[in-house]
Image: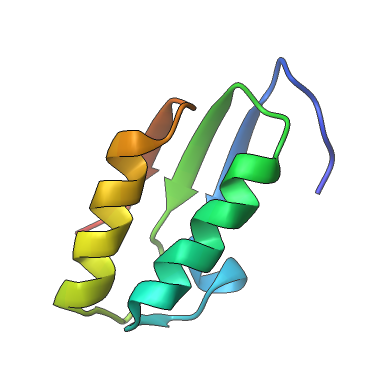
Length: 77
């Protein structure tokens, strides 16, 4: 992924993780990637995601709450 501190990056979560978001560790790994990116604003696109487990959702939301970068989520329904 290109790196720039002034741009917005849109990340399709199904391409970085899986279309079935089932494990807490998937959320941990995903946020490790996010934290390493040099972008001020991130947009996480859930387009194409088939399922999300409660454990993934819980971990994802906790990590998002504690993330220092502004994150917008799209196509989550």
